[in-house]
Structure formats: C-alpha cells, structure tokens
Image 1 (cartoon, rainbow, N blue to C red):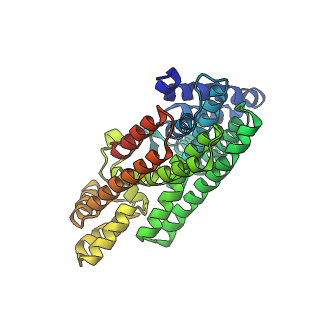
Image 2: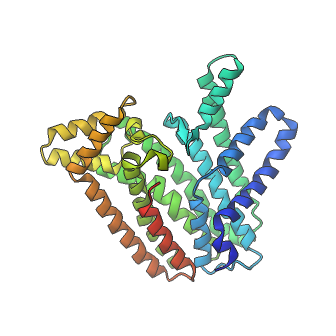
Image 3: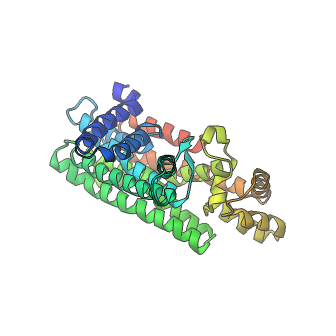
Length: 361
C-alpha cells in the first residue's frame, strides 16, 4: 500500500497544521488580541477527530483512478483536509446550539471562552461572550475551509468538476442543522423526520459529498459518482444510527460524552421515534411515558437514563435500529461493488463501512 494510503490521518493532520499556521500568522501579527481565537480553532482542529470526511474524499479520488505518486496528490490532500475545517465550523456551532459542555473530553469552545471571561472579571455576561466567540470562531473555520479548498493548487478543470460537490455539501450541512433544530422545536417524533435529518446532516455531509468531491477531483464519470452517492447514502445513515445507539448506550469513558446526553438535549433520533411508535402500537403506556418524558429533560438522572434504555430494548426499538444498520450496510456494500472502484480503494471503503457501523465510540 502507498505510504499516504497507509498513514492517511497523519498526512491530513500535517497538511492542516501547515495551513492553519500560514492562515493564522498574518492576523496574529496585526491583531494579537484575536490570537487566542485563532489558537482555539487550531487546537480544536488538530486536537482530535476521526478525519472521516477527508478519508472518504481521498478514497473517492483513489477509487476513481487518482495516483498517489502524481503531482496532484498533495493538492488532493489539501482539498480533502479542508473538509475538517467545515467540520470544525459545524461542531463549534453545534455545541452552542445544543448547549453542550464538553466534546472529546474537553470543554467546548463557548464554555472555554466564557470561563476566560469570568476569570478575567471582564464586563457583561460571561455566557454571552462565550457564545459570541464560538460563533465567530466557527465562522472563521468556514471561511478558512473555502480558502484552503480554493488554494489547494489543483488544475482549474479539476476544481471546476469538484465545485458542485463542495457547494452542495456546505448547503446540505446547514440545512441538516436547521432541520435538526426545527424537528426538536416542533417536537416532530416521526420516523420520517428522523431519517430526513440523518440523510442531510450525516449521510450527505459525512460520506456522500466527500466521496463525490474526491471522485470528481479525479475526473470521474457520472455513473461512478452515482454509485458512490448510493453507497454513501446508505452508509451515512447506518453510521448515524450507530451514533444514536451510542448516544444512549455508549460508555462515557469511551465516547467522551456523558451517558444519556442525547436524551437530555432532546435529540429526535430514529431510535426514539421507533421507541415511541412501538410503545404506542403495543399499548405500553408506561414505556411510552418513560421515553417521552426523558427527551429534552436536562435534569435526567443516570437512573432515569437506565429506565429509558430498558424501555427502548423492551419495545424492540434497539433491535430494529440494529437490523436497519445491518440492512443499510449491506445495501451500501452492494452499491460499492457496482462502482467497481480501483484498488485499494474498494477494499478500504468496505473496511471503513464495517468500522463506521460497528464502532464503540
């Protein structure tokens, strides 16, 4: 296997370090006060994450015939790595939207800046300062993502081919975020609404568009792109369903998030939608109440989270989500076969599909 293929996450991280250093330096010099905000973004981007989106983009490129020994390989790495900056924007803003206190076992950006405000005894509300900083830092990440993508150094024809994927992805992730908060606000607990959010927020943005972007950068034809979009659609939803199960059943020491955080936050997941629907169909009033009352209750205790877990298992929602994960992963792998990608991409994407849907964090 080529050395970039074998060490993809560290290759992506190196490219990001390089970009963040060069992007941050001028403003740091002219406006030192903004330095901590730039540092916070760099620390956030470099401090963790599975590098999933750039990985899908890279294998989309390799699968469509991209050569890792060509002059274009470094440019593709840069284009792929820019997806991590869109991800940083989404996560920093997501944490504000969800009022999350921790991510990857560390304080979220808005919480860290609020704490700084408090320690320094500055004027006004610490919380408002934290929110403002996080909004601006997320915006900076999105602006820098555009810069990193546009300046990746690939030929104009390649960039033109990839731009539709880039544009669609940015719009879809924001639409998905909005759909998510809208679903919570309207209390739409339908299976249909949960799947719509999953398709936009996770499938399109995490798997489909990164693959589309990479394949387009290699000059792929439409049938190949379509097969990758089918693969990514099913895999992306399966990935999100695994995430939803981990949000309720995951081990906090592994996931880095408190147990039951998704419940407290009021996330309308497919798991909960099925739990409520099944409880109703089966006339299980008690289980229905346990699940319905837990969603969006910030004061939910660990014992109450256990009751919800039990209810979700008892009505069959957990088994159904597991069944769907398996079925969608199978469909995804069938689409992957149809794509007939160059090796080692076909094998690597099949491996990724397996890892993404069986993981424990």
